[in-house]
Image 1 (cartoon, rainbow, N blue to C red):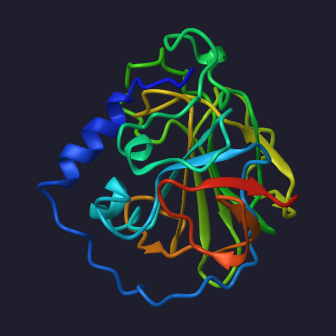
Image 2 (cartoon, rainbow, N blue to C red):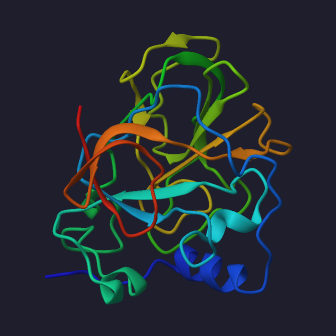
Length: 235
């Protein structure tokens, strides 16, 4: 049975986006220099992603201009436009008020590319699904420097699940933490974006092309992820 409870945060982002403008970007034609892989090994759904407000409610924020919200799902068949619009995705087992019932919660997050950990936060408690922590928008997070002014930001990680340290070198595919529901998040999911500085307050978002993944059962050598895609990692 499909779950059709639309997360509050997604609704808020959608209605906010309707009254705002796309953030200006100096990087619309940018090509990612770092070889990137998808950050989750499980079958996943792109809840927000792309370059338009219809696809991506993050697009009004300069640093999140090309950001992604990713959830782990059970159903893997290509979705209809109605399913996508209504977020009719099978993403939790029984109780939508219990973090552990979400397929995404506690799943391993891996490094999308080689790099150096430049910042972490790990002591933010996970929310009860449906509630939000607006005081710490990204919740627990990791920022990784890949070189070439490319920085990956992972947000909403699980409380005390980050296993890497600041100034630690990491390799692509390395386990770095677990998906959670911390910060301004209504249910377990991974927020990911790339920007051109390590500072969340002044970074400018970069388009992000991933390598060697399957989107809606089609093999993609290199591409940008967009809302509505079901992603299967080739790892």
